[in-house]
Image (tube, rainbow, N blue to C red; front, side, top):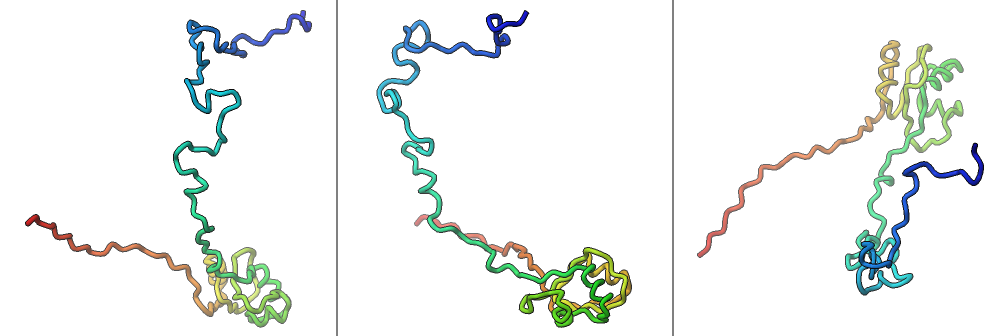
Length: 175
């Protein structure tokens, strides 16, 4: 029968505490596993977790300034989808451009270039004039047989590292 005086932990679930400073025969006598003299052998003596002894600490190895961010060079767009173009076509627009989208109040920022994304279906026949378009949007419009005109090709340039032919360094000879 289970009662409070018969409850025991499972065998092996509790490890017995190693008694310190109870003679050298115990394996943890005299200095109790703390070494000999020094800050860490004293009562209450230890160092913070970030302390790296003599090594230059991490917060001093890190650069003082925040570093480089490419965010200020990011190209921002006003996004429209194929479903938005379909709504504009249903409203009676035959040509969807930045100016017509502004007049129809479908976009609000006249300073940002317009980018067309491929979400939705385009059933109405329209001519789309945008600054940029995703490949799925271009393929969807061309598959439907309609016309898309991209004003300025804004492409991400990927730098390819080319190895230059390096001339071998002449060995210095001892005189």
